[in-house]
Length: 478
Image (tube, rainbow, N blue to C red):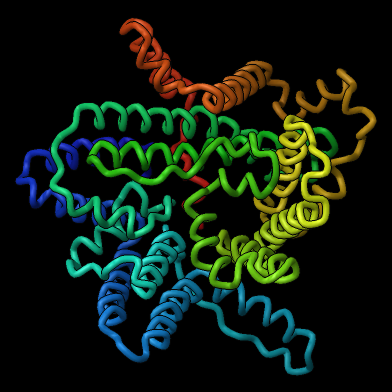
């Protein structure tokens, strides 16, 4: 059941009315039951796994808080248990596949078995949220939760369980204990944010996906500017898809007076790759900093240790996204580039300043280049793009060459080309303006006629310009 499906619309309406009509003290129970019902639509077996992880960490955190002597050992076993579950479901087959390839080079040609398991939706998100909770209890930043139901709610809350954001226990758990009163303001702003996310997903991301998928499904047909152009489209597809999901998740939570953290802050206006990770998937980058980078030593023990820690974090960041060498390469590229930036700062400090717009263009170009490994299905696909994306570089300013490339991509469908490029242009302008101005405040100051006209235009765009098929969110596969 996806946020952009009709089933979800009826589900949400029912939950909304049930939540506000039952006694105040029991409202969180409605959201807990709804969250497990929502999650059961994906796979019933995954519900059992989620329940097991919840029980493990609920009991484990209480024991961790009570423990006087072997606290570190208990934390180690709890963290190892969570990671073992993640490994079995997400990485076991990747691990055995690579070992089997090595075994083929030996005389024994031994083969390890693989597991026929379905990857539980959202497992990377709720496992990381559990680990953060355990570490916070261990460090005495929070007390362990004594109400199993509210802890289960903390892990399973349906707006965020599929693709985050990864909430800190200190931020979300206290909100679950508040007796909520209906807020017209929060309901309206939540629905507005949800609608914006729906527009990003169904109008921008899904229309760009039609073109991107067509090219990546038939890579060998395309070369040169066609590949460069599609990489640019993909950079905006994945951003509008994932930020659209986050907007919808935050909007839904706000309707119930729950605030989820902001996960994006105009990442394509970043002036460095370090700056990009302060703006992109903020909940993950914050988690990696707080629970991995800093415990490893952060930047406290000299430049060599800092660079080593940076590479470790980003290699694991790549692996978190998927069990594929492509993701490892993608993470490593980011780690290497951030290491170069740290070296530049270390040796040159602020002896020279690069103009902001050049920094933004360079950073965006690098991020878009790195998406090659993120989007490609295989290493061979990535290598094909690397070999062929710069072919005909001298013709990239030729109108006839660009026109021929676009015609090939859009299959001579000029209407499709106009709609797609217009939508992309509108989204880029919106992104730029929302970074410079408080568009929400400006929107609220407009006359009723203008505000409702924008509502109607947005809803019409969603209903008329959406793809006929209900497309999954990109980050649900992680």
